[in-house]
Image 1 (tube, helix red, strand yellow):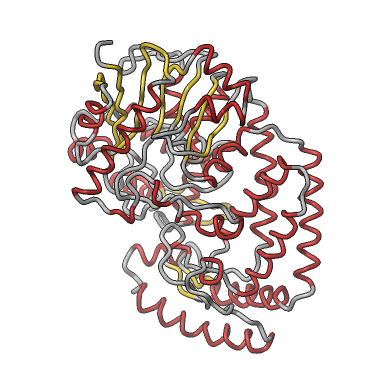
Image 2 (cartoon, one colour):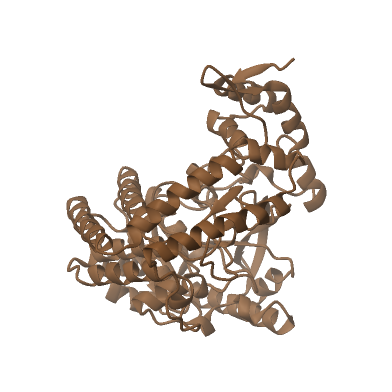
Length: 529
């Protein structure tokens, strides 16, 4: 006989069983994605404790640490896994202002910058009022955390769009002006959409999809049957996908919707957005261009970029790595139902407008009166003080006076990501100059011997250039997955030594491969210190 629990009771039971905090939302997730079956009693959602027990016994929960240490080595520092954190914690406030591949979580930065010690970290390396440097600034995680911890910070990035993201995150906000500007643009967008045929079409399409999915893909029962082998997902999904395409094509013809824009395959915006979405993007971009206040303009540019990224014409499963544009409805393995490409930006635009204001407001309560700025330039050659004097003179004076105490950064991994290409839509829309050839270790150069040698020279050159701005007895922390064992050579070329290594598991990767994976935090110091 089933031993049924409410979601709250199930979370309490699971917390006791796993000796960690399991929230009701975690139990709801298991139901939603078919991990366990949903039961009901007078409208209340219930789960079977025995099914929950079976799930935890056969899943990674509770035994992942043991399994991963078998695969990755006993030196794996599980203390730095931060496995107790929710996604909301690792993407807190402005850290989730814009998507970015390859960034580390803020708690990792905080761990090495704070003034606490433990059995693993036995010294304090930075204190309030120090200056920290991130020569591979990316989306500004180090800068934001430094501000939160009352530490000044300098960032450098070869990508002008990355610098925009970083500097927007840490700038102060005129909330009244921001709110009013967003309200005005949103009203204009709604009026623009209202003049098109797209809104009526999409509302009817959504209505037909809901009816179809409720009938043929009931949630969460359908996913539960898939996981238990009661339905052949590939055959069933293909069959129902074809059935709904007939409905979709009929609606397109009925409303005379132009789905595909006239494409220039070399242009990202032409290839990856449906015609109605592209029209709205151009409209919104024109609105942004008219904004006079540069700070507000930067924030709304980020909102627009985030919006159009979410509106790319692709499947939900391929958002991270685009494959081919999708111009019709399709069976979605991620959601276990028929999904559609986007025909309007409005929902994402409104959602991100609200989310951005909320995130800035949350960060405002944590903000300290310190300086942070990300310079656009090549970390191998840039003169930090000289360039900073033109951008943020107060921070330049501080660097000259007390120098930079150390570095905390995550250099690019060799042959993994093309950092400009991941935001190709933004470069094309805003007209940013691309510097792909100056990236260190980009995907397009591969992982071969020549690429690895170039990578070693590049990272060493960054360290050698940045050293001239560092204080004596500096501390450098570099986060990397060094499967090619390049960092000992890099350290030697920079006249540094690796004094410690922290090997941590990376639990929440965005890639589809969720297998055992680790990265190492290398602690470097000057030889002779």
